[in-house]
Amino acid sequence: MTVRFPWPTLETDLQLVIDEVLVDGVPLDPSLVDGERQRVALDDTSAWRELRMAVSIDPEALSSVAGAAAHAVVECTPTNVRIPFPLDTVTGAGQITLDRDEIAERFSVRVEAVATVEGRLRHVGAGPDWTAVIDRVAAPVPPGMPPFETVWIDFRDPTAPLGARSMPESPTYMDLQGDPRLLLNAAVDGFQHLLHANTAQLERRRLRDLLGADVARYAVTCLFRAAAVEVSVDDGVVQPPERPVYRQVCQAVADRMPGIGDVEELYEKLHAARDSALVAQEVWGAADLAIAALSGRDDALVTACREVKHA
Image (cartoon, rainbow, N blue to C red; front, side, top):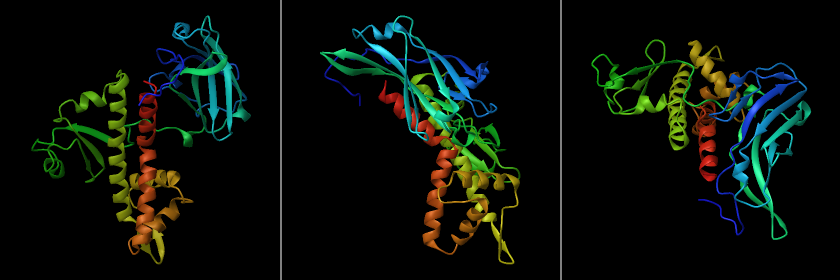
């Protein structure tokens, strides 16, 4: 649903462009500025004190409302700040300058437009957010990129694993025999083309990201459930899964799981869940939430909702 105001608003969304990022005066590698997903990766940079961003918009986008002015607005929830930076109404250019103490974990940058209408300052337009990630733990996970082998096969092929052949119309199957592999069904018309659509735009990009995140969530869930089966007890001490990839998945889930101090506590809860329906409900519910965040599903969904709202 589109929000409508009883005063003039801009005819199109404002598209913020990040032209350059300087970290303590040194230009950031342009590959770390992802214009497609509107993200800036700062988590791999060394300790720094000052961040500067040269940003711009198309000034013509302001012309549909008389006297409209735009600001690039920085919001950071962990430090509870909201800082506006004015953009030139003629050139559309502006600069964001932030001290390291003002921001933490991750922050967003959006452009907002205001104008004086009948003597009152009104909000007349905005654009989608950029996200800047400072700490890796706070980074949105790129959808559809699980940390294990993925293979495209036709699930109808006689050489496909039995589990895949039993579900020939399913888009995915997690093969846990030997080294875990995520099998993607090449027989599903358009599936491979959509997941590999690196230049997709608008609704097609949103669908690609949501589909990719759902595939990743399915794969991580399969690995995590298989890992839970391998958790055992030896002389009263809970033992982790034997497979390294299972331990890796459990560690990643524990890092994201609310109410879990470390992965050893997760192993204990997984073992206790076998004898208690209440513990099982608690641990598996929290694990599902953690996996949704870990796979990038939550971030893809939030991004899609925000972009559709401003469409």
